[in-house]
Image 1 (cartoon, rainbow, N blue to C red):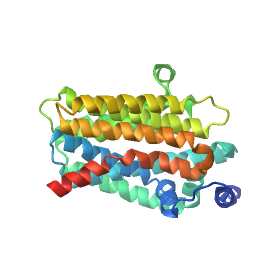
Image 2 (image 1 turned 180 degrees about the horizontal axis):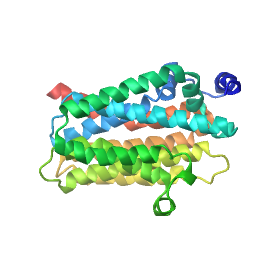
Image 3 (image 1 turned 120 degrees about the vertical axis):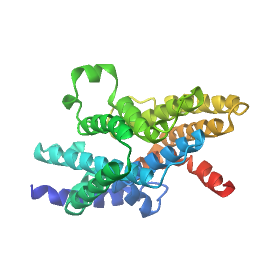
Image 4 (image 1 turned 135 degrees about the vertical axis):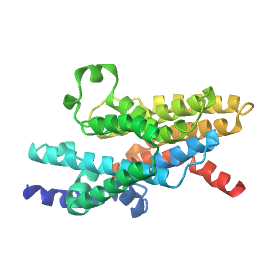
Amino acid sequence: MALPLANPQTRCQDTCERSSAFTWRPPQTLHLWHLASLDAPTVAVTWALAFAWVAGVHLDAWIPLLLACGTWTVYVGDRLLDAHRAITSEELDLLHDRHYFHWRHRHLLVPLACANAGIAAALVMGRMPVAARDRNAVLAAAALMYFSGVHSPARLPRWLRKLASKELLVGLLFTAGCAAPTLSRLHTVGWPFITCVAVFAAVAWVNCFAIESWETPDRPTCVSLRTTVLGIACLTASAALAFTDARVSALVGCAGASALLLSLLDRRRNRISPLTLRALADLVLLTPLVLLILGARRG
């Protein structure tokens, strides 16, 4: 296990050298945001708060904290497991910059992930109602089981692989985790909220599909087509919903904007370094921040 320690350093240096050939260089904080797995918790908290905003539900501060801690811990564990498996099997071509970053800094990330898991467990036991705890336990177990094998289809049950692609399953699980805090506080779930959840599930799916397509050599891709169709459909639905529910219309419009931004990234992917492209793929999912900021100012 000692030899691969040099590979992440070489890989990161190669990435920096390659990035000079591209036309745009983003702030290094964007790369760090992605490499340290801070992107997924940011997206999860943003959409969880957006769902609550649409439904008119107040979420206590501990709920976004729990979601952030749980999401970050799962992603760190998943990437470390992927790195360990690829290194032991000498299949380093399966790894990407985020895996090398986690492997290089595993002595720091593992204790931090354990601490985050402890904080999440304390919040669940101390603040979450028993009824909600039982429902969320099923979701958490499903997420942990799936994310442990998300990059290795052979580890997933055969019936699950036939039922849906891993990109779709990740999108559904991620969406369920974001929507769960609001769903547990609604007495009735109407079609407007279901529309928002379904739309984000579609955006999360095309996001995962785009990333998988960009990172898989020689894989046929229709990312631009899927994201453009989804974006136009969301914007059309947003315009129609503007006369019935302004908040739902606004969030669906944000989802459409995210889809179209993914389409733009796909069209410009040859001008953007792979590391930057991967980070931007999650950054464009933060469009609901505009609604949250405007809502906070008006409130």
